[in-house]
Length: 240
Ligand code: V07
Image (cartoon, rainbow, N blue to C red):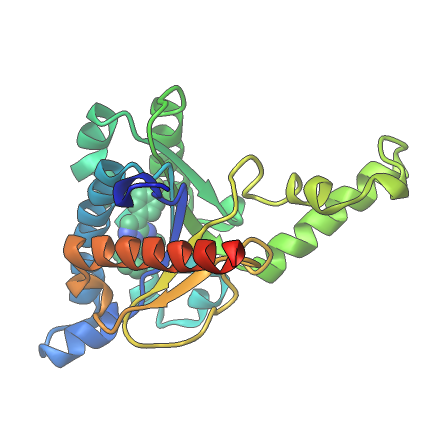
């Protein structure tokens, strides 16, 4: 049987919820919560990398988030540049590769510019892939994939009989990324909120009560160890 540290999930996805509520609770403006949430992205990404996780997908901005007050939206759109200005050298040192999923063209030009630079500069890295879901919605992603499949049928590259799960997956933004074994949502909410609907078909779901800025490396490692216990129980049942 696997030792505890061997059964590390390849892919962990996180819904980083509770930044605004955290700030409010401490009597600070919402944007202060986003700022602290951004600092925690670094801390948890480094932890995941240390643990041997190969893909970490973080829900940074949803297609629904545009309806927030415009001052908050413009603050959020500065976070990628802010984060990368501060932490890109460190992530590069750790051989981490940055990529994004979502409707990239719909982001402000300045956001696209900072993120593209980081993606380009880390493209050859072979370590953990840090995947930011930016202007991401799962239903949009599925519609985008359907259009791409239909196009491929219309132009004669694909026969309808060739469309299966594997083929369809290759048309999603997460093409070439294995499905997450684990989905974590912080801040005590029990919803999926249009995140990776196709990809989480078989994922283990974990809900942490801590808000995202308060979610610690210990909380993260605790979830990995609970996951390993769930897996081992499943293994036991299978053998019965
Ligand atoms: C954002 C901080 C984390 C909590 C959730 C909402 C606020 C990091 C990024 C980021 C994105 C792309 C990239 C590098 C960093 C980010 C947004 C919001 C929009 F290449 N945190 N963070 N982007 N928050």
